[in-house]
Image (cartoon, rainbow, N blue to C red; front, top):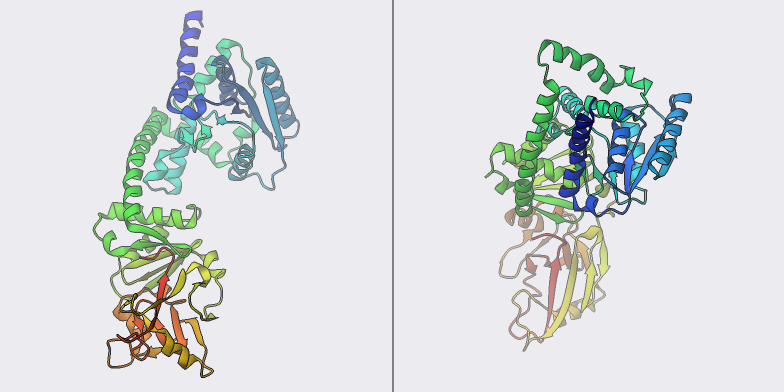
Length: 463
């Protein structure tokens, strides 16, 4: 290879790094840049290119010890390369319980998260991209899975060589006289990715499309751009449709009906991701079941999917982690009542504030006559604040007949999950005030009331 050709190839590969520096200010400002290196050709090329770009690199190598002497030789190679490049190296020696690609990757990235570096580069190539996209298609994926390997993960992991091929990097290493090591386990087709690389893709290139790698990489690029745009749409609409409440998230199902199916599905997926914290173990069937529950207009409904409990009631859908439900305090509570005071309800269900004001200054229509209440309570019937219980009945102020609180829940379309700790002030264990529905007729403040008791419930996150 001529010097001109070598210079051109070096320039092209270095441009990938320079593009990454332009796109990512965090990488450009990094004082310490980790380079994930296995000793293979892709990561070895990345280390040399990063050094030529004058990046302040630290070589990061994980020795799993799975290949005995080969693993030790890989580590020795990395140490020697660090000496050659005059840079620091950090080695993790770990013995994984299993040999799955997912577990090995988890060990790497868990370790990366602990390191004192500002950014980390990985040597993923266009070949890796093609293999990832094809694998996801064959396994079953939605449009987001077609994005494959993204150029950056968070603000710390960067993959500047995704536009380069594995062959281009090896050709460049040879032209520059740089060594690398081949991992013998890469020939073991028991590993899924190796089977794709060694068996399936060669067959596809021969019998279907010689440019399948480019086609799959292009698909990932198109899908990535569209996903990025759709993500902004989904986030914007989620801000309008979803709100937090008592450890979970509440979705407005009535407004969800207004969107096309494709956006409905994405909004449900995002709701699940936000409530659960991730999408692990969430499959298409879970998304569809959740969407069906949200869109059903008949009665109430409830399902559980991995990690989440979903309940629909009166046009709202609550998504809450199952572990949050399991950790809830016992349903029933009973608190001695006094005023003025603030009562914090269990399980982040808000607080009840009690305030007193003279009748001449405070004429709140929904207040109680504090002096009459105290007189009744003095007959050894203490006032208590407790949650709603089945069978609770009272005559609301302004009404002329008893009503069950449960029927008021139905009338006012109170979702099922909000009823659990719904606060009620009781005398002789009979309601004299019920949150939202107001005081009882017997103890409601009148025009001659001298001291008003005002109660206000502020449930967390509920509107």
